[in-house]
Image (cartoon, rainbow, N blue to C red; front, side, top):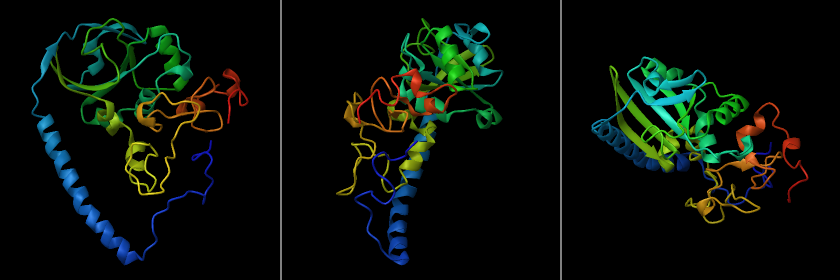
Length: 271
């Protein structure tokens, strides 16, 4: 799969200026002052987050997983803390029709061993019906626990596309935090790494130097707001960022059976 469709190595326009090491080091150290201030402010925000109040909910509400209906309390797996990702769902859609943004988040959370070591459990919940969800989870190869919360009231069910944190006190369950949109980004390490690169995420909203291209721009229509191509990564079988019947969220091309013959094939779309 090509990484920068239409731009072979060496052909990227708008490269940074070339300087000697000492000049680069001085510029790097100047930026480091701002980076450290940003880190300290993030620590202060996290400290405030830990001081938020919490709200009690019914821990006996049932969600449906691989073992059938279970109380939400079971998602804690005996631990005191729980993080859930609330994955959007499109009823009746083929695997390649599910949400790109949610796919990026769930894909980056392959397992929760480091959270578990800290006493925190992790699960994915979605509003889809369990039979559809189970087939999708198998196709994607996910190993973290998934549950259907169809018909369940917020904050366990309701609007999807959120990260939410819960605390358990015996059999009592409390919501402590919830975020959505770009608040979900900490899960997605790829975005953080792209932010360190000279061409960034390649999204149209980014503030780039003159002549720096929007690498992730999407052809054949782009329903994402502001041409946020990288947040909604979709590609055809050749790795070209595109929308249409022959495209799907990028990681799905790596799954068993995810071949072009499932869609229109390599010649079923325009270049």
